[in-house]
Length: 431
Image (cartoon, rainbow, N blue to C red; front, side, top):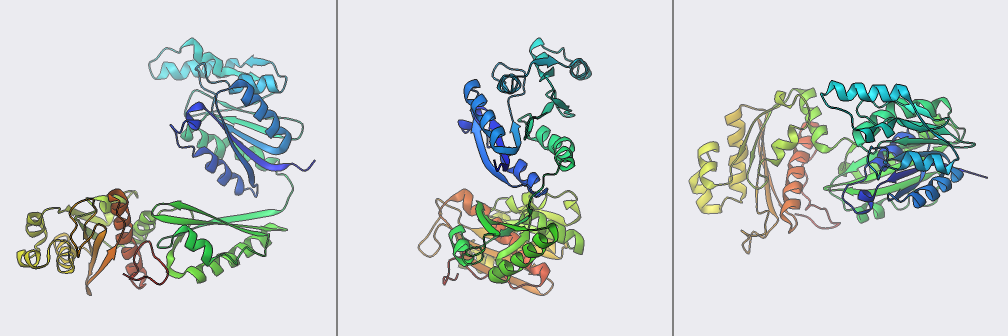
C-alpha cells in the first residue's frame, strides 16, 4: 500500500464551533515541509471518542506520519490518550517520573495539584514521552507498524516548542525516503487573489512538479510555491527558478519572501540603514506607529508619532496652516504634505510619514467619498503625496491605509517608484 507522507489531526469541540482559530494545522505542515514531507490531509474532530478512534485508525493506516494536537488536558473532555490506547490495544500506564514533575511544577507556583491532573501522567503502553517545558501535559510518540503517531497539547506555544525540540528531531532521525520537496511563500500587496491566479495561471499548468497555492492575509495576498525534484539540489534549483519567474511577472507587487509581514520588513530596513521616522496619523489613528513598534528595537527608528484627528491638533502639533485647512479641508493634498513635513521637522527624522482620509462610514462628500486616502512622505529631497480610493469598510480602510503607507516607506528606502495604483489594484485602473 502506498501511504501518504503525513496527516494532521486536531481535536476539540471548540474548533468545530469556531471558538478558536486553528493555527496548529498550518504550523505542523510548515514544519514538516522543511523535512521534505508534504501533508496530504488536515482533519478536525470533536471530543467524541468513537469519532476520534475511527479517525485515528484511518489516519495511521493511510499515512506514514500522523500529528495530533489537543485532548491531553486534565478535564473530562480531554480524551486523546485513552482513545489512542483503546484504538491500538495498549494498556494505559502511569509514569511516576512525569507525575513527580507535575507535582513539583504546581508546588513551584504555590498551588496544590488537583487529582484530575494526575491523568496527564498516563500514557499508552510502549509510548515514548515527549517533555513539555511550558505546561503540565507532556506529549507522546507511538511507533506503529508503518506509522509514527505523535500526540501533543493543543496550546500553540506548548505545541510549537514540542514540535521543534521533540518531534522534528525524531522524524529527521527516521527520515523516510522519497522525492525532495522545497517550498517558499511570496508576500504580495496590491493584487487580488483571483488576479494573482490569472497572472500566474500558466506557470504550473503543464508541470506537475510545481504547484501554486493562494491565500489572503488581509491586506496581503500570499502565494505558496511548492516544487518537487529527484534530489534536494534539483528541487532547490527549480524553486529558485520558479520564484524568479513569478517575481519578474509580478514586479513590485512582491514585497517579501517568507512569513515576515510588511511592518517587520520595513522595520528591519530602517534598522539596517540606521534611518529614523516620525509619523503623523489622522485616519489611521496610530495604527502605523503600532505596526512599526511590533519589531523589538523599534525605538531606534521610530522617534515620534502624533495622532492628529482634529484640525486644531494639526495646526498646534504639526504646524499645518489654518488657511490650507480652510481652503482645501483636512483630507487634501495640501494638508497631508504639511503633515508629513511637519512631523519630520518636529521629530528631526529622516522620514516624515502622514495619512489623512475618510475611513467611513460617515464624513464623506461628493468629491471625497468613503475610502478617500491621502498619503504623504517627507524626506530631505522634499514631499511626495498621492490620493487613493479604497473600500467602504472602516476597519479595512484603516488597515489598508497603514499598509500603503508602510509600502511607501519600503519603496522609498529601496529607491523604487512609489505606487500610483488604486488599492486593491485592478488591471487597467489607476488612481
